[in-house]
Image (cartoon, rainbow, N blue to C red):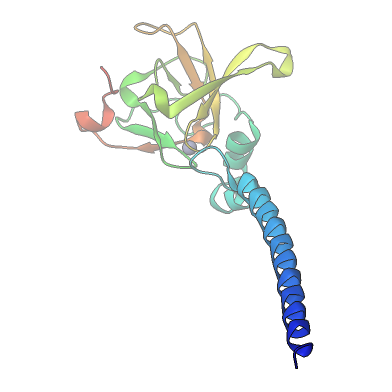
Length: 184
Ligand SMILES: [Zn+2]
């Protein structure tokens, strides 16, 4: 009796040790997997969709222009000659981008604006494609390609935001609240 009891205790201690070691190993592996998943999920930008998802909601031309940085032919788009008052929204995400009040006739065949509704709603990036040095304009919210901005626009800014109609959707509203650029 006096020998059996310590042996039993010894076996129990061994079992407990094995259980602790196996448990600790599992926890470490689980932690690593969690870390990898977390870093993969952290995407920048408030609206991220796959190409397939964009294709379901955009026409072929809209997809080519907004998601693949294409350009619609001059004088072919829906809005190059439009004078209807309203807000031009992002075709992809609906963010308000340009006001009809900042639209002007640039004679280029693309809708042109001297400023965005809000500087935070668009972002720019250097574009050196096609052997040209240009500044690309993108939607801040969904990263849609909108067009380019050039320093040859009219007052008050001297800028010309040359935008594809395919990247825009006119929201024809007339109230001052909807159309006046913020900060003006
Ligand atoms: Zn957008």
